[in-house]
Image (cartoon, rainbow, N blue to C red; front, side, top):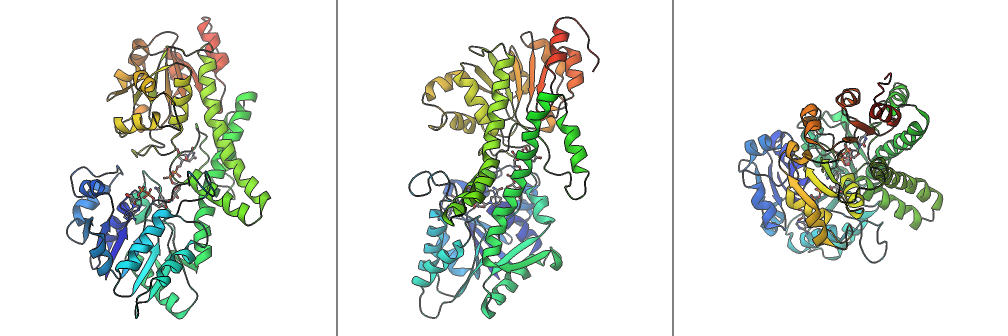
Length: 476
Ligand code: NAD
Ligand code: UDX
């Protein structure tokens, strides 16, 4: 069997790499319109950082895994084609700011229709609105050459960045949606056969196409909703003396609720949650279900509130002005173990601080400096990119980033931040020295003992910090 995957990004790359590793009898060609991306996949420095990915790619590349810009040949030779292109939120036109932009999916479908000379199973791997398969089918069938048959399947991807290889190797479930016809069932069986190389058959779930498409949006909406729920309670904790970690533990021990995805934070980021919920909201509005749309909108609103609330807390704590103060930002990626910055909460935090006149010293172990500058000078973030460039310095070492700063703001939960020498850091900073832990990963008691003023999410430390600055050692 020959497989082609259109779109060599965060999903296409790891998915095909693991598939190639587990299916030595299948030849997989990953194609992309970006020749730069394909060149990186063929080099020693892959275009994305993902733990374990380098090893898998090294084992399979040019054996049964190929990266190419020759999209035509890959489509022509393939029996099964994954469409794994980006589906960002529309930035203009109908549904601007909410609907998923399907122009890349559509262009992939048109390429298939134009090039195919034999039967193809076309698999939606991208996250799409419910009933998108209908549009793909419409394009393919309207351009169908005589004697060629297409089957369209939905096979959404549930991997999370930073754990993609493990998620793919040990998927909780693989979901395949197909048409409820004999041919549809045969196509589902063929895709299922690929996954059965390493996923137990009982974990391969088959549904109708629309359920599969909607389940993907629903899963992301549920996950994000948990984070917004715990983040909403973090505000209550800060106002009452409750500790959100204790609340999350107590709530999560109820087996009906479960403990995962209850980590209060500066706000969720990443390319999926916001985009997919906005997409769901848009669908609901179009289906004339305004109450359902409003329900999910609140998950996004709460996330915006949390990002703003954290940024405001920093300014208020620093005597209500950060003008010309140097502030170190530790971590810029939207979560640890990835270099991806899409929708990262760090952008909102930096944007607010820059608008207030702060100078930022930013360190992230995996995000490229150019990416940080691109994000902070984007027209949606600033009207004066030159001023931003002057106010931002990117560091390749955390100790150099924090030197002579007034405050540290921790935006990403990288493990290495837990083990930094905070005594050394304290000595190199301006006094009073502040730490704002947006991820709740540091030992706050110890930081206070060193002399830091500590602020975090969902726990009030202000009193202890103030008392300490007056020379009184509080009971912690
Ligand atoms: P990405 O931007 O990293 O990669 C998409 C790639 O597709 C790009 O390299 C782009 O150049 C290429 N492309 C676009 N149109 C093309 C065309 N016509 N021909 C050839 N190449 C084309 O995106 P991603 O993060 O991999 O996401 C892909 C899809 O998977 C999206 O629908 C996303 O919602 C979904 N998804 C993403 C994740 C994630 O964690 N990133 C997880 C699950 C699902
Ligand atoms: C998510 C889904 O988890 C995955 O199944 C889907 O395929 C793609 O979208 P991803 O965005 O890569 O994956 O990472 P995820 O681990 O879900 O984290 C998303 C954001 O939520 C990150 O900013 C993370 O830091 C934040 N988060 C996560 C919290 O703030 N608290 C939590 O308890 C969990």
